[in-house]
Length: 214
Image 1 (cartoon, rainbow, N blue to C red):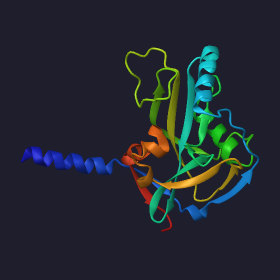
Image 2: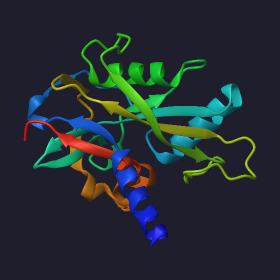
Image 3: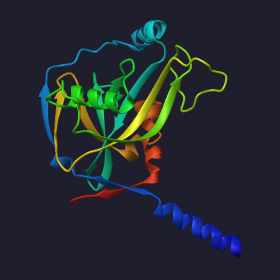
Image 4: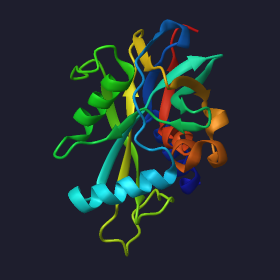
């Protein structure tokens, strides 16, 4: 009986320790457009070739990406870029040399989603790191862990929770679409969204979503 009581107590503690995150309705946000941002990668082959070139010059490539949520139909939705009607990406990008994760992510969000793309991105509230993926070699597959035998990984991608305010304007490049996709559609759907995006719902399990205004 003592063991049963302990298990029940642990379950309650797990629930109590969930971090509450406010999510606001999609219709409380405004969307505009701006000039296109040229793509540096026309294919996966080009991307891997560029990663190799950058690695030879500067070492491991570090990317930071934002997990941003909105509410639609009483369900949490993830904001994703859609490029060329088939490629889905989280907002973010590569860090500059000696740039911090948070400063780099704010810069990328300002460039891709703000009208003042030269700003410092002070309006973006970057929270905790949700997970990291590693590219052990110049290959397509990324892993949610660093294999112990890999001493010099070629790329690391870090996901950060970015809490949105009650309202704001998103200014999206004309060659991209900003979509809100339900978490239930993304979950374990690697074929459509790839291994990183499809793992986001699981990474968010420790959070409790507070749907505001519904």
